[in-house]
Figure 1 (cartoon, rainbow, N blue to C red):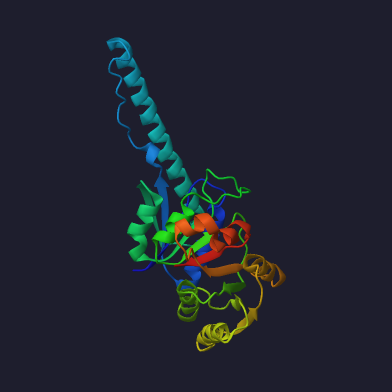
Figure 2 (figure 1 turned 30 degrees about the vertical axis):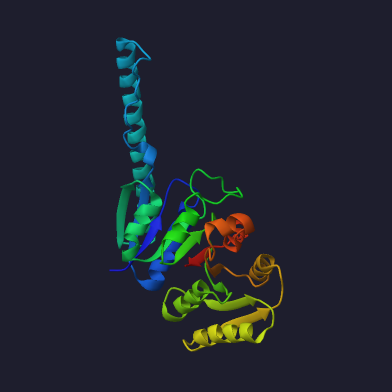
Length: 285
């Protein structure tokens, strides 16, 4: 059965992830799997090679001390994860969510999500993890890797949650943007919300044709669309302004349309919008 996978840690995003997961559950009537990943450094480490560095007695004592520290650190990480999961489970219970499964795993977040993806309809996580300050310009270290690795929609939470009433599709005609349009037209997640469609492009016939096709796709599914094809160069700034001027609560967009090497030299529109946006963003690949 398809499910919603909600990724949580000890960050300030956990409340917003919980709120978005509850909303998605009510919209789609799907169970929630609550995922917490133990960091790799909580695994038992190999004993260091101290040959020739210490005397027998000193080496034996040091190895024993290092082993105890590793075991203590690992236990603390496990206990911390269990507390995070218990607190989240309690919050879901208060919201009347009973279709909840707890997944407490070890290893790489990306690899675990990739493994669980076939069972998922939607994956939800915070823009930053517990090791990144909320006001940091840097995004979470796992975010881009997860977004590039999965095929299912990825919903990214902001620190503060709010009710969702309006959403914007930032449309550029790409396959990933068309995937966002198709998702809105065929899934119940965004049903009942006000739909906005925006494309920043030159007013050329081919651009107008692409935009009209996306607009008609939505309208054919009985979705009322507020659409705007606008000319301009600063796509990032114009999308941000539209969000602010129209009280948009959720942004949908294609994610990382170019390779990491190209983004290294030219930057990524996805990253720019993720950094500047103060509303949840739903990414499609």
